[in-house]
Length: 101
Image (cartoon, rainbow, N blue to C red; front, top):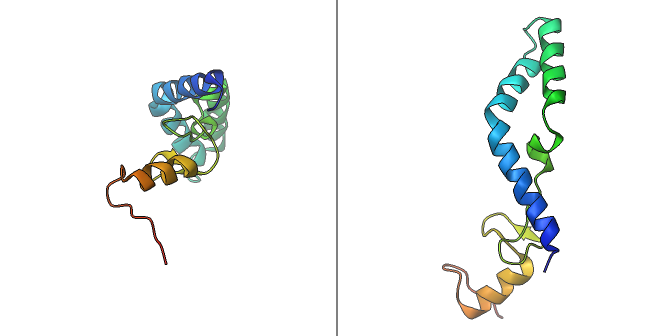
């Protein structure tokens, strides 16, 4: 089980990303537009730098929904490899079968 503070910190980041998503996307589009004026692109980058650091989507860490473990995360299921194996063996994940040969 991951530290509760790490899980809470990540949840706070997700909330900030969601709050600033529209503004971030708009500024990013301006900054990446090659046909726009160079000064406009620079101003967009400066405004992006003024946003909170945790408002950047790359700061969010994928964590297991049950244990909070950050490593071995499967996006399709939203859990880590250990939980996937346990729940799969118990038959709690629809469509998942344990292979044996």
